[in-house]
Image 1 (cartoon, protein in one colour):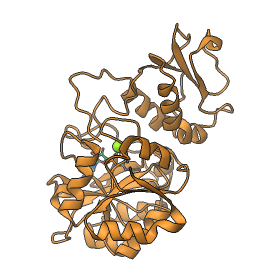
Image 2: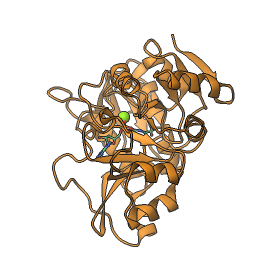
Image 3: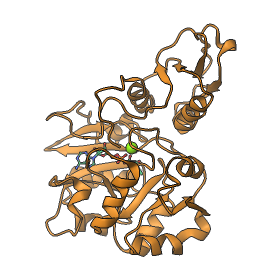
Amino acid sequence: MAEILAAGEALERALALLQGGDIVAIPTETVYGLAGDATNGIGVARIFEAKGRPRFNPLIAHVAGMDMAERIAVFDPLSRRLAQAFWPGPLTLVLPQRPGNGIHPLVTAGLDTIALRMPRGFGGGLIAKLGRPLAAPSANSSGRISATTAQAVAADLGARIKLVVDGGATPVGLESTIVKAEGEKLRLLRPGGIAAEEIEAAVGMGLLRGDAAGVEAPGMLASHYAPDAAVRLNAKTVGEGEALLAFGGQRAEGWRHAAAFRNLSASGDLREAASNLFAYMQELDRSGARTIAVETIPFDGLGEAINDRLSRAAAPRDNTQPTT
Ligand code: TXA
Ligand code: MG
């Protein structure tokens, strides 16, 4: 079983594991990440193996500073502006790779672009000390709900990894927002922990939506974030044996009979809802309910990312290849 060490005491142990080509689960401000040295092919392969990822989809490389980022990728002015505005923070930029950057090709699945992010908290210090970027997908088995606590990581991956660094519940609770500059425009590849509106305000223009050329963020396949229970969206009623994931002051008919009940945010605060989403999905799933009924969540601000994750959790499970 993985050892769980408090963030304040884990730096040396985490460093030693990473330097030896091993992997470590670490807290970030978004969700827990399963980290390996992005320049070490064995370490990166261990990430895919531990997650049981069916295919080698590209990972985000996490950096500790702008100098490290510029050694790995080529920044256009728009992307640099976003990095200045939102790093460290829940924003991932997809950029052309700088040749000879030492990043193992498994990280990028052979693409000539790379997804970069500068995380807040424990990860930043760890990367700086290691002196190398960390490849880190969310620390969950492939296709499952992302982990927002060290305990959730240990319950899922504990038998396959040696160390979980415990930094408490992750404050944002949703994965990073992923954007990519396309000429003078920006495309939203994955809604996430920074609302699209915030990015639009920072750059003074609207974001392009949808994928220009097929699936741009290959991890964005339909069935994903799947609990064992079925998921039913926009629920106005609660059926026999169903659990209810509520939001704000709505109350689906029959809610008192729900097999289990959680309210993402009683006050209707989307930021609070985002931070509770994955943990509450897991808790409702553990109740053994056959279906999780979910009340309507507004689409503004972080609601876009919350609805994105919920619709993936609700997608049909067969004939799909969950990937991250
Ligand atoms: O908040 C987060 O982003 C968390 C924490 C741990 O940093 N990480 C995370 O990683 O969510 P992961 O592997 O679960 O999701 C990474 C996403 C996938 O959808 C992947 O397809 C996309 O990033 N991606 C990675 N490299 C890409 C690239 N070069 N072009 C387009 N999409 C890319
Ligand atoms: Mg993931």
